[in-house]
Image (tube, rainbow, N blue to C red):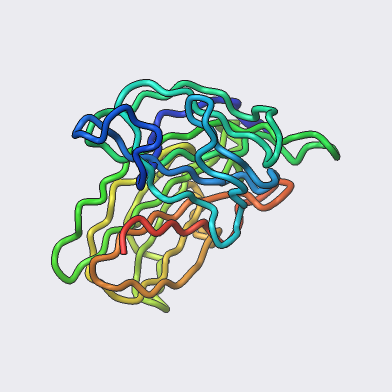
Length: 248
């Protein structure tokens, strides 16, 4: 199986204090950090050498930090195994003024041998937390699961996403989000607040076998990000994406 070792452009969001910024004026960004590596243990995050988040856990109650605030510009970001100073990610990221970001630690290789840290990389995505239209919600998908692999292309498969009423037959349905590539984030879907079944299939699978099939109850005004991830050890996509509460 081929897995690409690569860092991706995207977004980080931090947002509550001015501890990391030189001033609390308008020249700032917001960033949050997300633990999206199923084979990594708890992660600490440091920005410019200062720890800003501790013991983020995959699939736990808090896979993401709160939004924190920092000055716009370039910052060094490090992800470390909790309680250590050994960097699993050490990268410089640029953050634009008045912009919000999500920075994910994503896994890029199979489960490592015992006592060996997994290979992870930073995936940054820009967020848009402007409120949805009255009575609506916004939802997007970030595809960070290296599996399943498209054998013909020898790379992680593109996926289709269906946001449909529960119990819908998608056999002849058009995807809400079509051919979302690995490491990509979809556009935000602005839809009426309701209960939806969100289904993910491989784009090239004409049988539309369901990689993910989850039902969500959305309340007006909410913004949600769903993140596709592998199962621990790799080999297939988890049937349960990470759900990030972006707003409300």
